Length: 398
Image 1 (cartoon, one colour):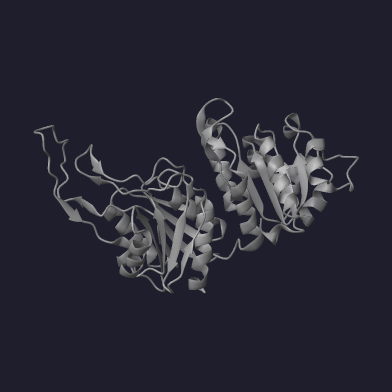
Image 2 (image 1 turned 90 degrees about the horizontal axis):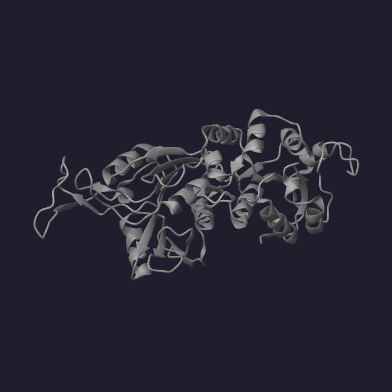
């Protein structure tokens, strides 16, 4: 745990979600790292966990009411708002998110948020249908437009028994977001970062395509991390299976040529281009307008080489970062790509490795730069990899 947490004052708002128990773990890890953690429990949260449970972890008074006679101060929400280095609401229910978006202040948590100038992190947790509701999505967009940082939610098994997007983000991801705000949340402010994600699809006919196994998760993690550090982010993506990151400009494409056109358009005025997408090396010379019917035992498709988007990309002092997904000779192939593409950094990974390949939430990479440095990272979440990668990009920007 980084020392950045030592003696920092963090206000943790816990709202009425079944994921409340995970907030206790978050509070524990923050306390272990040396932070002063003041917890505010909403009425809903008190149905799941008690103030005694939380105070046993934080060793500090827990705020449960606007009119708390046991509070060290009669205006607890004002003191918390002034002293906080960061305020985090985890888990944040749809109800509390709606109140924050409307600027309501009818409990100790919303009054503290309305009174503070500290950065605020929201970690939503709710049923998937509630999260997907247009009202909730619009409320989150309002909070993003006001400078709030949204972390998660994740997809997976929900308390309702359904599988969907609404799980509270992992504690490690929330801690990484707090670290960003406490250290370098604005180190990319004023910068424009272009990120590509997903696997391109080259049509053979209206039904069939040539594509690859890329999920787009790495590119989305980079886009989220860059946005959280203050950058204006344009995400050029082929992926429909991952919800669009809030606060990020989304450009949907399908083919390599479409991605090339979008990269060319947006990279002209960008500071950084990060090509995390898995781009098809070849495309069919001819794409049939009608479905090709089944014929003999063999079928040949003539392919033509696609342009190298990263190598072609130009811009005023554009920093270029590529990804090398390899199955053998990882470092040697990555070094070759670094030179051929004129990039400043290449992120190499072994696609055959267990637990870090396609569709995984984790990655294990080696970052190579133009100075001959090679930095091998341990297995990390893709968000953590993205954050480290942005750290390595900063010196080139300066």
